[in-house]
Length: 515
Image (cartoon, rainbow, N blue to C red; front, top):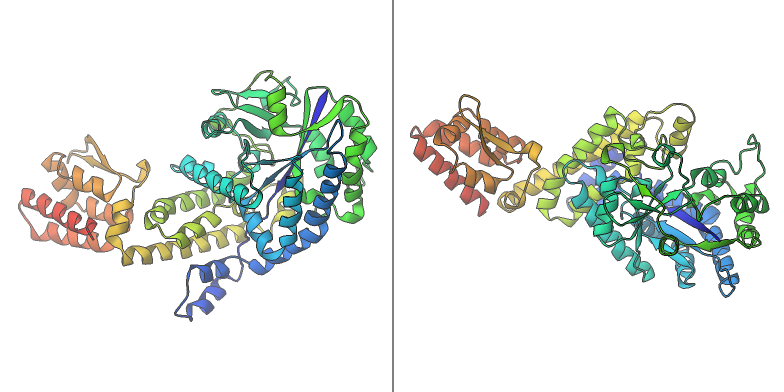
């Protein structure tokens, strides 16, 4: 028996607004401007609303109704029809606001008991690949998504994908340690080698089960269905079922964007009829059945180890790597800039700031900055609301600038409180050296650590960094505490005695931390 596993990826991003600057100026005239107003200015919700309403009519509602019909039709048969959905949290937000009918039909599908929901990051984000803070933020977004699945569907997933099927050994074992038993990814040729994607694999380093997408058969529907130049056009349900029946292996894992069914391929292409008749055509073959990721992971023993080192992370986009999101200088700088604000946002404990930062972690922002060629470039252009990557980059950095200003305002309101919670990554830490440049082995990642370490390092080192301006510069530039930096500079000019200088600086820092 060969198990057919269908997974539908359901996601819509919050797109940035090209009129962001003008909208912010307009809202600034209102003295009562809040974080919600700022979000409305930064994101183009008129476009976001239009896109999800259009897709609801063409794809989400009619396609899900067809799926529900088939789920119910075959539910009590020997071989029921089953599907899986991976739905981002930000999709559920937008659907709830602008197209609640989507939520209703998805909930109806889940209540049949024939649907598995797959976990992902709430914001469909690049959280895992942020410098220094990746797994910390990844865990938070996965847990947030878990709560959304409980809230909307009363469901607790055991299978998981990282955004856009990105995968490596560390990610697989991270998810396994969170309690997930099945990790989903792409059946990349250079990883599989001579092996087939049509088997269950085991992650390297832990006991997580890995399902690899059969991208050729998936893309026959996802990309080629309405291509009249394709030598297999038109693709009918019976023809596709015969391909599945002729495919060797324990399973065939098929995954595609849900927008395939009415948005990427319009209803006029026949995609809805294809979806309607496919389950019946598949079940005509005695050796085919429908399953879900959880079921095949439990049914079949792993055939081999799926080994993807972190430096060779794979995905289902473009060249099956990370280049769709961090492949050029603009994307890499945008990721670094976003990550640099993370510790300040977290230390602020301000929900509005945290929400805005997370919205800017959505992977699509970085996807729009890609500079590709040929057919891959055409795919990026199809999805992007911007004329080119430079516009996408400029808008993103403008949005980060707004977030940075909000952080500065928050720090000025409660500098001591934020300073007491702020912990920087190692690459932003202050490293104590002796006047001759030799390293003392001591560093500080926070104002609290600086308070402690400046009193424990050799006096010559502490005084050297104070009088040279290194410490006040770090306080101002890395911790963004301008007033404290200014006060310490004044002390270095006013106090000649080294011991007293260090004592007064520590007292100043202590007073600052206590607020």
